Image (tube, rainbow, N blue to C red; front, side, top):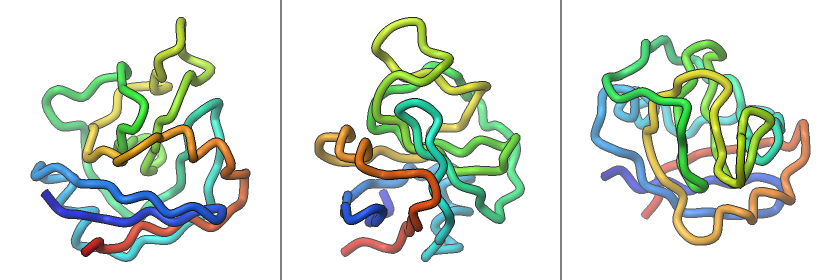
Length: 124
């Protein structure tokens, strides 16, 4: 599992990427920087990756999941309910490939605002 660090809006969160092909594409481009956008309790930002959905892609995600959304193309970080949610769990707008997971309390991302710079870089 590739360790990464996410920095955005004054926060620093450690995370791990999976071993799947999309996660490997993301890892090969690190560091990645973009402008955060909020959609409920989800942050997403455009990335220069062209990948389809992997087997097991879903709209049902967990708080702390990091996912690739091919329609963006974008990386998404989920930390609570989104406008597509029917309860307290996050739900992606359309199917995504989960490529990693943030460690610790994902609700720290609630301090991130639209337009904040977000960076994902290699961890230690």
